Length: 90
Image 1 (cartoon, rainbow, N blue to C red):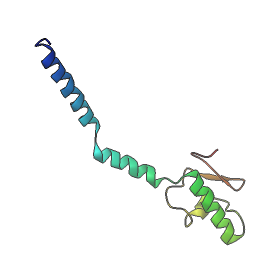
Image 2 (tube, helix red, strand yellow; image 1 turned 180 degrees about the vertical axis):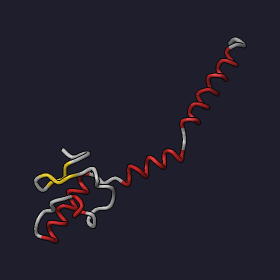
Image 3 (cartoon, rainbow, N blue to C red; image 1 turned 30 degrees about the horizontal axis):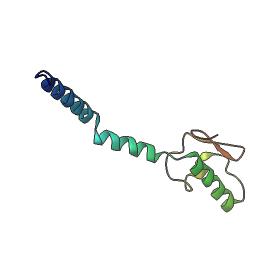
Image 4 (cartoon, one colour; image 1 turned 120 degrees about the vertical axis):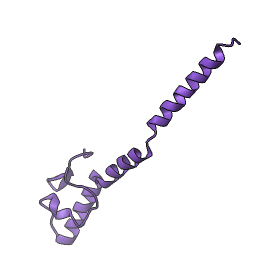
């Protein structure tokens, strides 16, 4: 092994460690996780529609009527023919 291999190996190892550490931002990861968790899923909106229909005997006309039946942000969804339509819906 040549003497030059040791400093080159050390430099590469340290640069990889520094790059990895700089990419790990716990606060940013937490903010992203919270924003994703606050959004409702298509399945949750569909379940809320079923719960609403069970209580009221008819499907809701607007998403605003589902406010008490689902947690999270449902502003990106709409109701089409009694089913949820929006992000993640087929």
